[in-house]
Image 1 (spheres, rainbow, N blue to C red):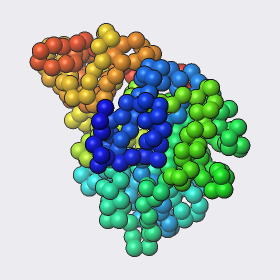
Image 2 (cartoon, one colour; image 1 turned 180 degrees about the vertical axis):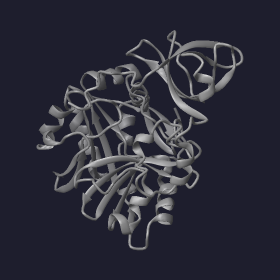
Image 3 (cartoon, rainbow, N blue to C red; image 1 turned 45 degrees about the horizontal axis):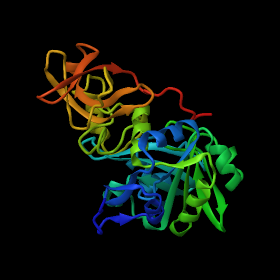
Image 4 (spheres, helix red, strand yellow; image 1 turned 90 degrees about the vertical axis):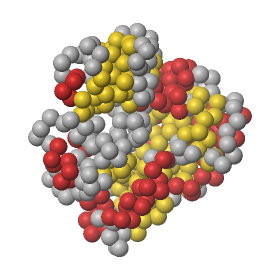
Length: 366
């Protein structure tokens, strides 16, 4: 498949080509969607370990006091009780309460923070931070200098501790600095698959060697965006541009637990209006009655064929052997029944509302 030359390439591009990966345009990057097949790569992550190229993600280094820099006001989550070498998931909002981005904050030291943002939002996020941070804050975009590899799966710890001794001490949502070929690099116990796993941040030029070293282990298989999407949908995890965007609030998307209303933050007043009453719409989860997978953009209907929303993400679930999906629907419409339909004006498919996560056997907290 030919990919336009103007797209960005990660440091692992040639490795993907050598592995005969099918490449696609993802947020302006040439990324592997699959190597040997989505199901095989999915099973590698659920059963053993899979390695993902995530070098397209953005990384910012912020130096400054938490309060006076303005960082605490930019994020919806509580940051002032974060311990050094811990991570925290949160959101940045616009004044209307829509989500600018969801990201993970790493506390490197008393006055240093590492922000990991979505690839599609790097420029937008940086501009948003510059707008709301104080002049005291020093923020640098480290995205082009930073490589990122994710190793995920039940055996990821035993695989990685051979290469990076000491990672076995990390608890969920903790990180530390480890020596990788003479460089001090962040390794965190985080991920987006529902399995035990680690995210490795290292200089771009060191990424290729780490990738190849991990794949020397017979328990590790390279996995693409296709498997990653199935894994995250089975966990009911939101993806920017699907379940959240500039016009969908955390209340509507079911992410209110990542909002601390006891502090001030950008977009708080808009969210306050939404709290204490039934939102106009909300994110729900559904299982198809058949193997037919819902697809992003398809409409959702009541059993009486009344349109109530649309599919934000969908896939075939190897766990259920059925299609599963996430949808944004009218609260008034969905409360009538757990049964619904999805599709278009030509053909409807039956589905049932479900409580996330779809996959309940994940190893991420072991």
